Image (cartoon, rainbow, N blue to C red; front, side, top):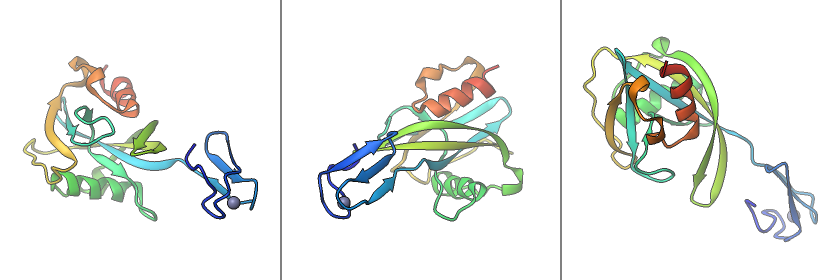
Length: 169
Ligand SMILES: [Zn+2]
């Protein structure tokens, strides 16, 4: 369970239902641990897709796509452009982002288990030269050809699913 005690009154009489609703039986406090929204960007150059190697847990060392959590009040397209600028130092034209699909993911950060909905966009790059501007998050960059890559090298289930379903044919 996310909490052991009520965050409002500190009572231990809390119950969790449906795995996301936590209610205090003492003071009536209710907390919904709602799904968090995130973006992932499929950067393409011809038939290659750019993957990042995760520097940190969850799933350190596995392949990932550039992206991250959407900030409160932010559009998904703006989050995609912001994350790409933070991680790779390039400015995307938001009008050239193409919506692909969404997929659910489980994200365990420290002791908190987040359920996320990852929104996938695709973007065609004009050249493949890229650097890493967030070395604390990204250990390396790796171009892959989805139809011939080993999908098990991808850490997050949402990304493995979308690359497998939309790019490996
Ligand atoms: Zn309470």
